[in-house]
Image (cartoon, rainbow, N blue to C red; front, side, top):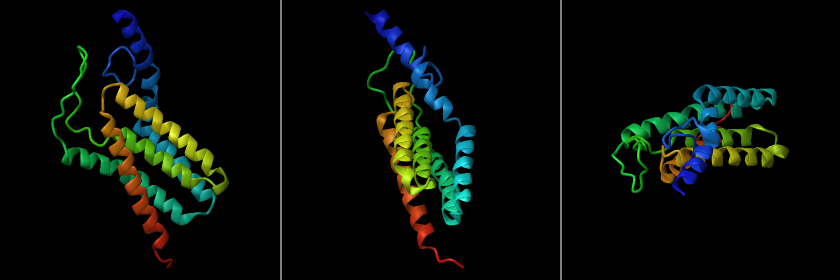
Length: 176
């Protein structure tokens, strides 16, 4: 039975429980590499430029830079040792600097930016795509053992707070 469980785990998460780049689930985080994050961000900015939404363009640029930066700063400021209650042999410990999850923050930031970048008629579709991205990345970082679920939730909350603050500032700033 244990061998069957190990085979099932490897098919979903990869050969190593701490490996972020193996198996079906591991492909989501691999696709959210910083290079791809920047490339998707450039596409979103291009969409807003094409739509002549200048304030939104600036807000998305600031937001896509600020959310991951805030996550990295918080990780270093709030670093503390964390114990995993249930571990499997050979499983890597969770890093002390793991809250909030940078991958979850990036996924939520892309989902939110996508939702406001597209025309109003397509926002429901963009929100669904963003939700799928966030769900995939969250499952990936939690199942791989790199983060606790609270780390992923912290990433969503951080991205949401940054989004609300930047969008509020961009809509209330006077045109000059």
